[in-house]
Length: 401
Picture 1 (tube, one colour):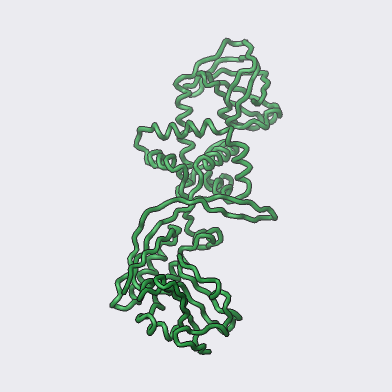
Picture 2 (tube, rainbow, N blue to C red):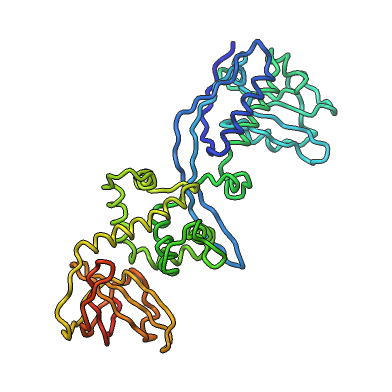
């Protein structure tokens, strides 16, 4: 009596093509009197996989999020021929001292069989140890709770059908469903079939933009200015990412929150931002779309600047003193002059006032975009730049909050 066998597996999505090809190949091989193997996709899920990296004596662990497809494989015969199930096989390979063990996915061979030597391989159907016999199948009958080791030449007689092709199939499925070696799988590295945490990706993107002073697209890139997303990709594959994320996650937390709010509330038609709503929903970004996630940042900064343009007003009066005013640095621009390098610092108090300070002091070298500082100084003048009202400061001192 043939009993339906249903096997549930969770396969890394990038290996699904291989699984489908294996099933098609086995359907072409099996005899006409047996039904086809059927595969049903139950669903998909994202699982965290630990990657261990080593470089220049440094070892670090990284969590990547991998897409898995949950499937159900349905077939006949591999389990249930007259109540007997095929659990696996032992192979007598000439060059090896002990038999090679193959266990069917989801089954378990008793330890007794795993410890057998080549000399102990005896077909329990014909009670013979044939030197030239290579394969011995381990069977189990649940109805009578009995195990049986049957040689390959006796198997068809014992079961009434040759399960060798079925075992080949299950071995193929087994090979394609193993997930604990993904980190070392060259096929996986080529597939780039994984996800990165959205918040961490945005932190790295803002860090790279602030270090460079501006966003670099692929069309704007050259030998001296790599695309921002490429630099972020390099960081994602280096130990440096962890130090940057730990150092800047609190600093950029407000910006990340505002970016998400801006995307969620966006009502326009730009594909880039509409697609980003899915990034927020999942909290993760597929490797293929890392560049799109990073490309959101210049749009966000432009939107942020447009809001500042609409509400900017002058602060105080010329020659007034300001003391310990809390502001956020929103722009840092350095250029050479006859007096050395000058850094233009643009600041926002988030109360409708934009400040500008031209500084030649080395004391500001550690300042970065996004820093919250307390500034004291004198109002030098009120000016306007591209429609933005700016309060120009001079003789300033700063404290980083």
